[in-house]
Length: 320
Image (cartoon, rainbow, N blue to C red):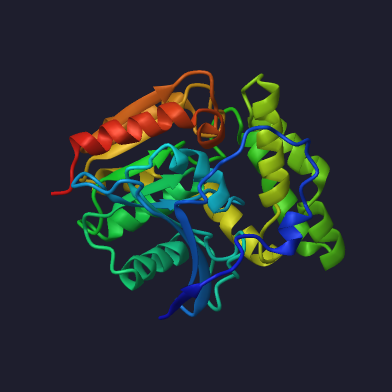
């Protein structure tokens, strides 16, 4: 396994996909970030390291795992508010600028195997903090269940507590299943056009956003238009989507014996609040922080309370 510096964090195709209005909101991490490429399970994975501004005895290394159709950009507003910690984020294989797996499936076991090799390659020990957002919450929770004592502690943002086909949004999920299936089966040009449709991306963005702040909305739309279509190919996207709507944190909750923080949005229609409370009940050492006025986009809309919850949690659960 090898690592080297990468000169760019974005591919030209991603740079040209932004069509949303410009927003005055910006993330400034230039003085903290370095970019790298690491060959993991035969795949050259791009990852970003954000150094701690003033390292101390309390400084932790946090590995963050992004959600479905996201990449490392999505969590950077939270990273910006955690200057006391060293943070590492990869574009998961098949997303962002990381190519698809050279072999194997883009599902929960596949991404779990990637995460194990990624941590080992970077020589990150058992005091590493692991954080997953949305689909990333499924990946990291299943990884921790399979590798107890490998990390400490665990943080789940907008955690997927129940199958997406259940509950009030089940019909919409079935439509999404058909959308991804049809996009994979159509002729390549038509299928890719459907998956990268600016209109569909915009509708998705509007649906998930809860804020009424025009500047913040412009930022969210800009992020989604820039990065939501950054995937390697239709087949891997279908595999990972099927995993995202069938897998849950709940499946492995009782095996998560380490302190686990759930950060939930009160208006989340994907990872609903009642299901977060049910998940909390079966976690051996679970804690729940609910943020009002936000849904499934905590990382964009309410990074301040999310970062505050993470800071407080880590202060109460220092490295053993």
